[in-house]
Length: 193
Image (tube, rainbow, N blue to C red; front, side, top):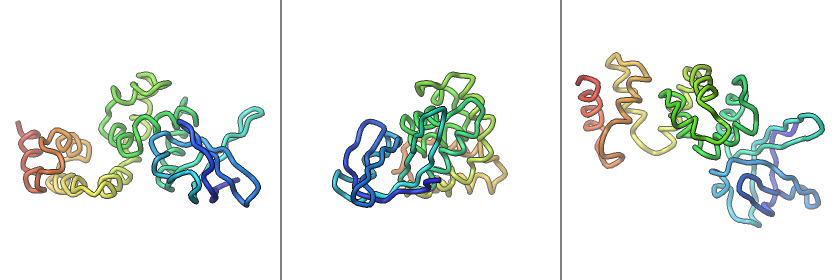
């Protein structure tokens, strides 16, 4: 099993990269289109966390810039009817953070807009992964550098569920410019009325 590659970025496409490893071998890896810009420029060293899938007579290497993205990709693949290509399409279209939020809040409309994902598949994703992504959602908010994770934690401490807290947070006006206390106040108002 190839669990990672490190080498020089030689070429990129809309959803793939080519990496030269060991000086004389180049590997082609399918990657989420939303993360290609995070890998750096051609000629720079890159490290990908990878997963190799073999189907029929084809071997496809999937690469990710972080172990968290790879873990999310593998969780998506664990859902019945969702294969590696569909998982890659979800990550490419939505990005890790938006995908986690869409699944955790049950946003079937957003998920079903991804090419290759219908309403039934989107519903299955929500059903099978909703509870499993809570820790990833908290990490996503913390990694984004916002205090949204703290707002969700404060609302949960008041007795609201994680889902209710995230939905209320999504309805708060003002985005990142609003202070933490104001976000909590607005979210409580939305839930109360």
